Structure formats: C-alpha cells, structure tokens
Length: 103
Image 1 (cartoon, one colour):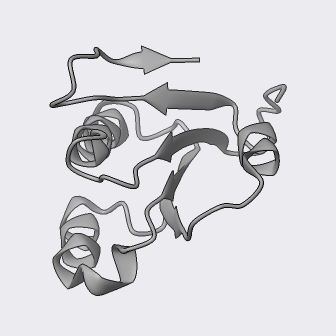
Image 2: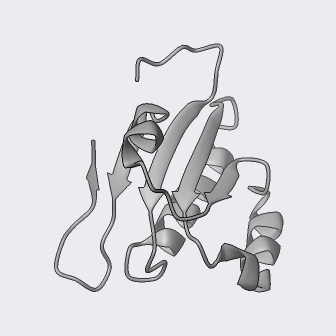
C-alpha cells in the first residue's frame, strides 16, 4: 500500500499468540516512537481475537498514550484485505526462533 503522508502510516501484526508473536514488543516500540518522534502520524492494526478479554491491555495502552494509535481486530477470514490496508507488516517472534521482520 503506497504511503500518503496525509494519512497515518499503518503498521500491521498478526498476533493470535500475542506474547509469542511479539505483541508487547511492537507496543513498546510504538511507545518509543511516539516519545522520540511525536510528529509521526501512525496507526497499528493488530489481529488479536482475545483482546476484549484482556482488560490490562487496554489499561497498558492508556498508560502509554497509545489507545488512539492501536486498533485490535478479530480473526480475519480474508487476509488479503488486511495486508492491503497496511503500509508495513511486522512479523515479530519472541519465543519461536525467528527475528524481527518488517515487510
């Protein structure tokens, strides 16, 4: 998806296994980005079907000031529309032997 500077830069993550897929790593990285470059307009779309049950996650985002920058999505049947809505897809892995990759 070509980036239009008038719109937020959209970062995506498929985090069905939130901890092992690096969900907290991405959130921490985005909080650092917001602190060092507050002028950058960004949004993250994270596929995490269990997000509604994790009340502490909403609290954590509020503490970091990211509640307006991160959108949690339910399970996606057609990943093509998800991928095409992104400017950058992050493939994070904390416990499964892969390193940080962004496409």
